[in-house]
Image (cartoon, rainbow over all chains, first blue to last red; front, side, top):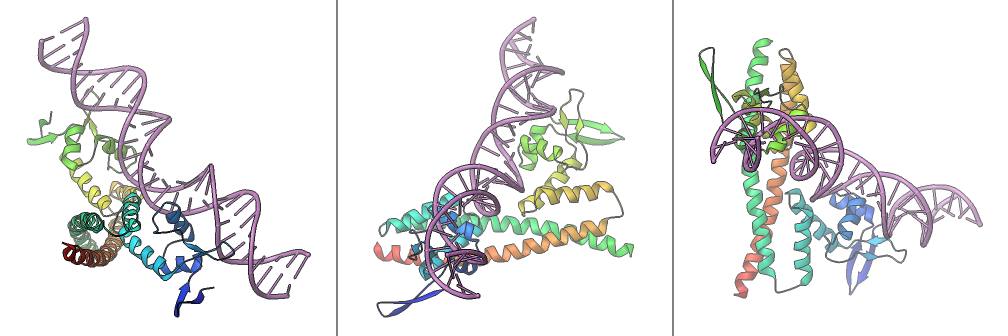
Length: 135
Length: 135
DNA sequence: GCTTGACTTCGAGTGCACTCCAAGGCGCAC
DNA sequence: GTGCGCCTTGGAGTGCACTCGAAGTCAAGC
């Protein structure tokens, strides 16, 4: 189903929603939901049939926001980021600020989870020792 | 409000729900919710007034399940773990299995988040360089 | 030309984990 | 003895992020 077209001499691949889902690890439901909710930079292109056609840029952007989401950024904030990028040049400082704030949160949370993990591993150690003596 | 009592010669401190909230970082709402939902090992002791009195063991257990929750274990699974502990001796292998499965999930997710974080840091690097040249 | 299947829309439904509310009880300060 | 504040209960409400359903469209294959 992926369509290969030629624009200005360079090959352009576009994907159906199912293929875009496959490529990004999201469901087709989620892809439509993200678009509706303003998380994508633009409305996705359509084939003459009205079906969505995802460009490589679309997929790249979706992969980026998937990284933001997987690190715990709320939908609302991803939308803010998309709004800034959509607004075009001149707000790079704001985008940077948003990303840095997120990075700091993620680092902090990563450290906390690592600490909790250690405590859990300690507990596991206790159980392993007691189970071992039982056998 | 924390009550110091003497039982069998050793000092026993018990905390009001507000103090237990303070000590565990949860809200009083959440503490009651966890108890209702079977996440605690037993019903918490009551003062003659009917108010809850949290023992040090209670607080220790709540801290443990808070670690499980903060590392992403669903309420449902925390309850399973509590059920096993409540059932008493003989199911240590099951508890161990549950904890190990959780540990493995956490390790995996930690690694994924770390990877996503690197990609975000790379992006930040790009913005920092471009903002820098603008100034 | 009819079926099939992948797509479309809008709106409603789900699951999770809290979070809050209203009405009432208890014990202490004034 | 009355106001105050902290507590109690059951049940309802909230916010988030999907997730699903129903009804309809379109292109391709038989």
